[in-house]
Length: 173
Image (cartoon, rainbow, N blue to C red; front, top):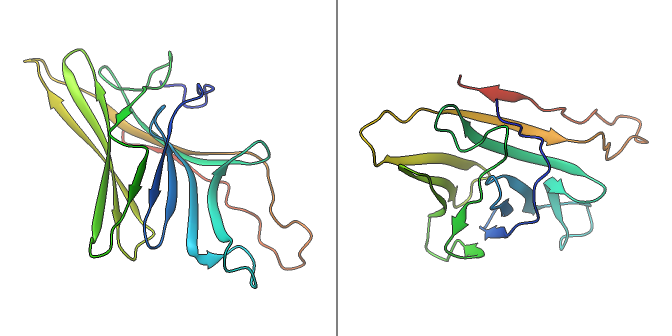
């Protein structure tokens, strides 16, 4: 079983901007480390400060992690993969409806692409793994994902405040 909570090395962060999402993806593991919603304000009278949904700072950890576990998986007890990427910044251009951001990894006998797909007007991020098996042997892995968070409570003093979502981990194993 992969150790998805093993500390990550300091790595490159890929910045993605669309009309409805500002996202940071860590190339170590390909985890979504920050999501801001520029159309939703953090405070009512501060339109220049977007609402931050996911974040990874010294005072707050709330990130979305995913990987591949199994005999040929990218994630293992020994660590997370270091992906390569063609650029550090990606922007959804005017007139463009979809943006694909590819993180790539070369294994001994396979080429793996972790693809993040962003669509204009949507807060949904689609994550796909594309595996090109260059051997005659079966390639086997299963998707694993989790939300890693700390105990940060953004508004404990409000009378009618709801408790924050704790998160869940899923696997297709």
